[in-house]
Length: 301
Image 1 (tube, rainbow, N blue to C red):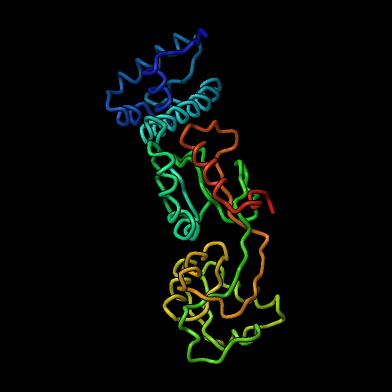
Image 2 (cartoon, rainbow, N blue to C red):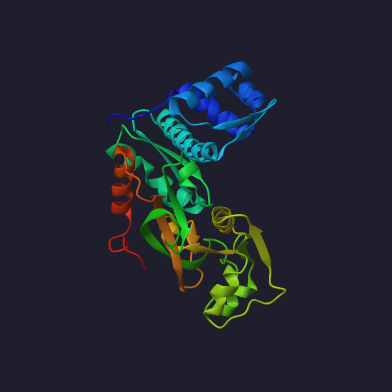
């Protein structure tokens, strides 16, 4: 392919001057003199055969053609910048930057990372906790694990598992208290809330026709991991995703004071930018995490 590309120096000078609306500010940004910027812009106009700026005394302003060209050039430079940062972050394609919902990261993914490392010793996972959506077009994050209903714009999503809430507490929490035999008795104890989901307990209890009294004992934490940790310490009863507390239940750190559960129309999804071609590391992680979810769960609820 024979691309008709103007000199990069001229493109950078034009883009900076057009963005700032000033030759002087463009020169300061690129650490050159104003006359050098003017020279590069003039060379670009000669190369294109198109006038890009109007020059009035010491002021410059874009022509209509210049405005159209600036928009396209800015997008192209942004793409080059993002591709460069991604390559520098992972020069061999052997590292994958993944943003993960905090509760899924600490309670599901971290305990299994060693298995991935054993299978793929040359691939580095760079994991960061984050509950907010990622703008993949402007981020060096390769993939993310979201919690929600599976409907997000501009991403390809793989369902991992649906959330099923159960009440949990530390193994010794109820040792000296009356046995809980029905849902309304949960309200006799401290119920641990997650501040980002303040109505979760109310909605859970409503499935059993129970309304939490206004004066019920409450304790709040900023995320699910802290809430479950508080429950293990005997501070109260928390709601947790049944799938994410399996290890604690297995080893007797957590118990269910009452065998009830509520399935949500939400779950965890592995996502990445729509249409993105996956590199070797990303493909390995997708294949591994989908194989790790419980049999029969790797389909949308």
